Length: 266
View 1 (cartoon, rainbow, N blue to C red):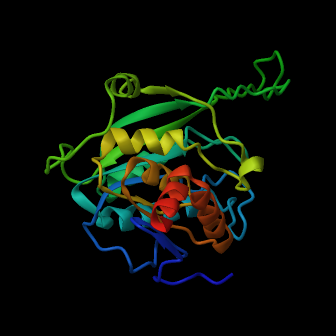
View 2: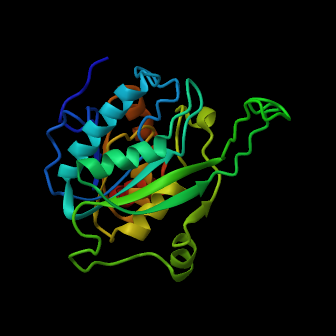
View 3: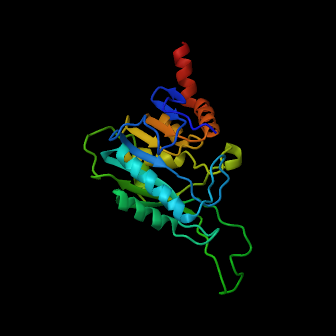
């Protein structure tokens, strides 16, 4: 699989996709990003095309440290990050993924602000949790994911900008438990998508209209769809060409994209 270059794979208005590796890309300037919204590979043996999601856990944490360090350089001094990660993993040995990633992020220079719990409302239907009706070896399965909110140097935004969040949205979303369903991976054609609702909330709550939003693990393009819907500049980096193509396909189906095409044709 060819790893792309720093030339845009796709560009439309303020939305751009790079088929590239976030650790190698040279198209993003340092201190240029207002907000990162992303969900990196989880290392839970998900079948991504062309990527091994079951590497040894220590190697996964090394990779995590590298990309977190790189992305810290990209954000502005008042830049922020919303990082969607699992609470833990059980397959292949229990690991405290959330705690480990937060520790690494702080180690490389990110400052911790808060954590939002995303309740996917996806209750497991399994009939055995490690040891059924026994204290022998039970597993506790939490149908939630974490959204870690961090920043570079200062939490308060330096410049004044326009916010587009409504009163009701602000009241609901500043409650640290978000309740909405996950995305259908079979329907979407990607093994681990998040719903548009997730980046949309992060973008409207933590950035101004016109801010620059980066997703270093773009996947099926959900973050850029949210950027298009909220009038943000959106940059997506995705190492897999097939997923870049999927992201473009989804963006072109957006109502806003279709309306703008119609406006240009009139």
